[in-house]
Length: 338
Image 1 (tube, rainbow, N blue to C red):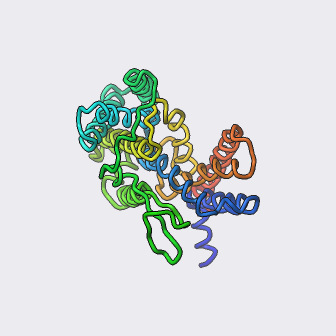
Image 2: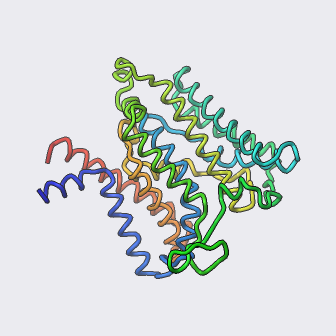
């Protein structure tokens, strides 16, 4: 019974990424103990959850057989819209936030319509949307970052990125007590993890997502609204990218139209490393969470141990190739019943 349980665990797509995550933590900590210091962990979590939010939505979209290359540009565009509306006095910050998020949803909607109604591959549609959205952000700002420090103590800023410290004895404080600094964005990320996992594994809509990516024609014959599912997932992807960009802009006090460049590829890498099938039909939120931490720990760890930051892509490329080989082997092992 024990061997059977172990075999089932090894067959899970999350097993390989989990082993790699543990190995990274052990190696980086052994080389530089500062890797697990409270200050480093707090900073790591702050950066990680912003990309992580996008990766959660990308997991659902890729499970449905599509992917979105425009998330990085939406990440930079949404805060530009919000802070431009606020800093020019057109509307208060909460209203500007709502408008920015509605525009993000519209971007996802049009991407989904182009893919499903016009039957254009999502690679081409979202590549074009990437250029349109990034160009719009640069045009609005003339290429210069927007200032965000006029937000002051706006309640919406506190709600999105308010921070507190976990002190000794698990007490909480608003001022630095030498403990672990936690941003509200981490709480939002955890909530979205549970939401996406529940939707994908426990709901009819989750079954529709998997069916849409596995065999869309068969899914349509069984009454699954494949096009509607994919449009909704494109909208959710853009929404999460916009929300992550706004959270990042509040935390860093800057809304740069160039922010998010290259994020789309890093997010896809997180999802694929976590065990979601690139061609659709299989997705795992738990695996994506592991993939998120693998890439962010790698970026943080190689700097702490003295490896040049420019070598980051070498490590990530090697991890992607290794994980793909492992997933392929596990898939063949599962299909042969060994």
